[in-house]
Length: 231
Image 1 (cartoon, rainbow, N blue to C red):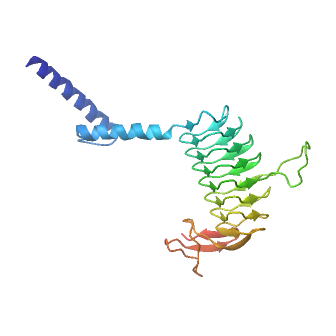
Image 2 (cartoon, helix red, strand yellow):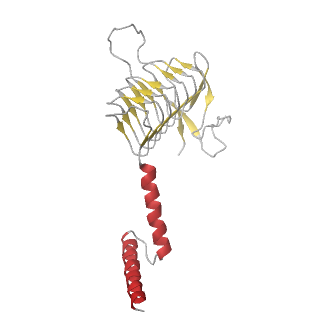
Image 3 (tube, helix red, strand yellow):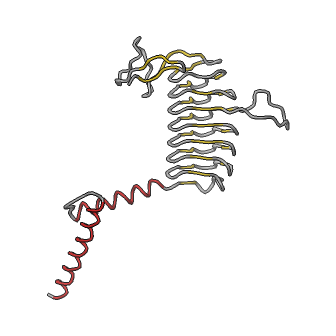
């Protein structure tokens, strides 16, 4: 009986410790099972936030945020800056003077050259092409142009973005389009050269209503740089 009593005391002390920890985080009367679940969720969250870099990729010296995954055969130069929770797919090249925000998806075969700025929540499709020099010559040094892709924008597969341009917020550049001028926010760009063929909602659907409203419930109004959501 004594060993059983000792075990019960240890169990009670362990449960009391868990209750105190629960009280510190704003919970009261948590049972043993709930306290265990809380700790398990925290461990899973910590694990999900860790960087995952494939051993075949070269990323030494680059700034890469937590939760970002870098797949096979990527080259990220030392001064590049990449945010959190990004997905960098196989065979991607990122040069030194490149800044990438959080939650960005870059599909395979993309090269981001010096001067590229990618904001949060951007999607870049496979083999999309960026440039940074309007008059390139071999072994000639000149100042490179900055290309910006603003938040929530989408660049379709095999699209080409000429240097020094800005892709507006939540804009949609279709597959194979050649962008030669700045793109307004929420614009749908199609063709070579790319022309605006409509407007898109933040959810990705085309705005077919004359009133610039989407079936998801969002509404927009025209502004100087494209569309802006109606609050």
